[in-house]
Image (cartoon, rainbow, N blue to C red; front, side, top):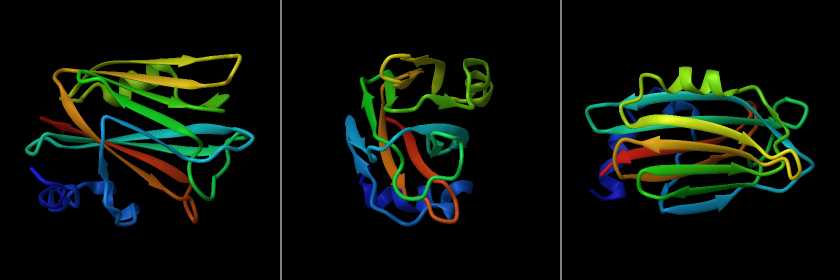
Length: 159
């Protein structure tokens, strides 16, 4: 299925209205964001289109103090290794999401079987690991903050 064929499907997501139209890039690894003095993970929101086999996770990124972040989200590195997606957020000493809350957010997922959050106290990297039921594709979209905080959008698509 081509990216153009997926656009009408993606528009059915409840969160789509908050995300400016961009052409997502289909990759197994993607890096992006910006360097800064530090960032925070404020919230994670999940939505799904079960009929099409797509799940969307929106990561809300704030300043290191936990406030609204204008501009791009902090530096990130997302890797898809087939049945595991790893997301590294650099310079992120603060997270309002802990392991218990992450599991609660993902408990109704049809594609994600488990998750883990790790914090590196030395370089302040926050790592989220998502274990998948089967090999899946991913798409990443960076959303600049303005009236709302910066966001990183992860679409997980059943192969």
